[in-house]
Length: 428
Ligand SMILES: Cc1ncc(COP(=O)(O)O)c(C=O)c1O
Image (cartoon, rainbow, N blue to C red; front, top):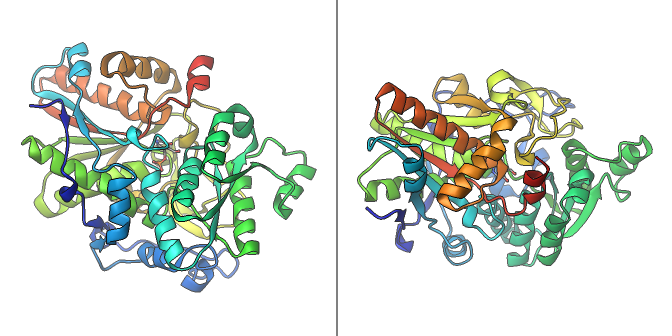
């Protein structure tokens, strides 16, 4: 069996898999914080392109065709389908018996180094079709901002990124990357929005994701641009399902199927991307595959959060979303994985957890550097600290199976590489 499993271009999915009709109950509507009524498409269309809003609330169609032009971009620009790899060296190092196997999906191979461009190019594609000329967005650690900046460069769209000021100062090369793709990057809070000036006047100059979101929303509303988000929402998870669909075909091509599918968890998009298509197999074919989301011990939205209505941002500007949340005012500690410091969770994933269709676990920050080192030494790839959470859980599951004398085939999503995270690894 080859170590690296490739897929022909013609096997790249023709549709996104829409989980909404397959969920056991209908997702609760988003609520307008002012009227306390369900937010209308008209209200939401100030922020988001119409086509994306249609996807957000499509409870009928299991498959949403990928337009041929967009499909071409996945193939030609994002170099999909992406390889899936059997982790032979890691298995050998862990001395696993032959019936305990590990596979991983290489989302680290994208232009910006993570899975985020999968939705960035789709969002930009649908937006430019509607005549949208630009996006405003926020970024914490910089992965999402880089991906949208890249997508903007493909479609000739303006992208303005409000980057949390402490990251802006700590991760200067992410800013350079965004600038090279043509995006305008501002440290947030900035003096270019009302909300930014207010926070600056209050002395909150290091910033937070909540403030950056508020600045991006204000900019989108004032300029007539659209606002873009890289996780949490249904349409974001939808676009990412190309990951899981490819993975199923790759596993089938080597006559194997996972018993466990593992993804790290920030807002939910890479987990959804790999896990949702396997959920479809569970639902339609009774496949019994365990779906596991892994979050940091110190940001336990799925494992310790409450399933209730909350804002998507800390400033309270977004509609209320029914999801697992630690509360919009939760202040996450500084950890390796900047991309996992989010108080909430995708509402679709929240509904799955609530209905016992998946499980969630946590990994402590102290395990991250040693696990990243183990993976680098065995598999030759430096993983993003976010993805390292999935690796640590995979190693734990494999060792548990070995100890119990059980067979297990674990597939995890390598959601990104850690080549821009050297400062964090060095510091720890
Ligand atoms: C490499 C990587 N993995 C995972 C995440 C977490 O986000 P999500 O849960 O939306 O996949 C991020 C977020 O920035 C990321 O950059």
